[in-house]
Length: 600
Image 1: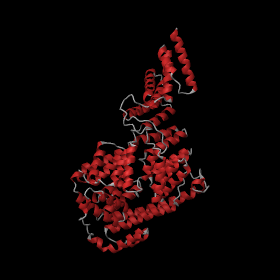
Image 2: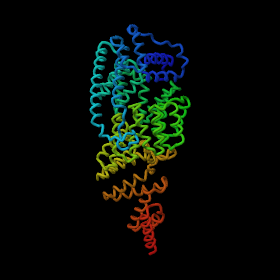
Image 3: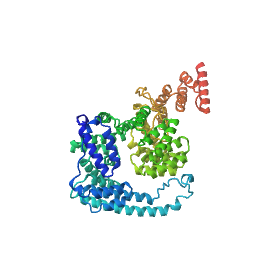
Image 4: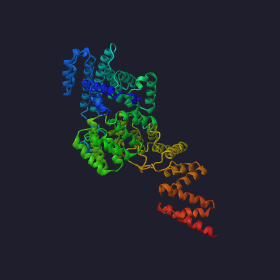
């Protein structure tokens, strides 16, 4: 466990890792390690730590590596690769192939002109061009296919050279490079194997851990990998870095298990000032709908590090859901002052304009975020929501498709696809996408309600009943409302403070009860129809009067009158005042009829 680790030894390893990662221009991993180093509980113990010396083979290429690093810092990636040709050391080999890989990606982005074409033909204001999608589809497709073929051939050359070196000597960073390329080529298992080998040799490369996490499509797949590693390589599984990995997997899979909180507590005690762990705590609270706790955590993060923009887009999503307009407005202004051209800032500004119902501007900023970072995962999904607001279902579908292509684990995008197809009355398509969303988020009752709606539309009533019963069961286990927020379909509660509610089987959502009752009535199941109508009506005490409880009251009054229970029918009907005119008139007629019959 983490408690048995010596912070001074860990500090020394982190120092050496920062220096080596910086030497290889892996800046994000180096930054992560440096932040971890500064977050250690006994930082003063690292003061006497000395970095490792260069290996003997690295000295022969040292001058050229320094020159290549200078070119790399100046964004001259081809020159950096060219300088290192013929170098024999592992670090020089990695740096040359890494510069080549970045150059390929850079050229691919330039070939696409950085244009995001979704919805451009429907809203000229977005790109300022009035051109339709068909005007440049053929040319674009030909150019993109040509660019992809060139990129693939270059990827293969990198892999061939890397594998040739690895056949004689192991190098963690070449394994990491192979993993990246195999992921691009959709060879997931080979990618995972290479990434794992890289981490066994050098566990402090957080970018490699991140690639490994992103390669798992489902939680079960990730959990299976974790268990295999624990069985085969127990010493590696007990390291701090593996615990960080396991914590993030559990957090991103929305698994609020005792193991997750154990990991968070252990790592927090070892790294009390590490912002990364605080962000994980924020995300756990956010996914558990504990918004006030999440807001408090992130506010403290910003106080400690005011210029930090990472995860600010998620924070702005939460403020949008909480309808904190003034705070979101301030955050948008503040982020713009820190750096206007960061994808996180663009997402914050997009949320701000969305809250003001300026959906065209919001889409423009989401597109800008994607131009700045094509891997900005949430931008595609949120842009889809904006197109839904503009009633542009086809553009919304294209945005959601891009989202699931980028991140198949984003259940919000699958759910959005289902909604878009449901609007187009394509219920079988909608059902498929809702099922994909439910596989990723089985504990969200809104997913099961959506599936139930689709089954009802295609007249599979028994399956619809099973889906609504599942939604009702989840509602009993986790009492929550059904707040509708366009920006985050994970939200299932309009009442954010639900901790005071006791876990009671009688506390259920009236809407689901009423839908179940109507479906059962269609199947002539009188007994269960009465049970769910009675359950729906009983929710008035907790939820207040709603359209569903009023309709259930009217149905029960009608049945009581038919069964000769005039007193009950009168009591039910006389207080129905909060429904449509037709229902109110029918209730008054029932009340009059019941009162007259009681007098006889």
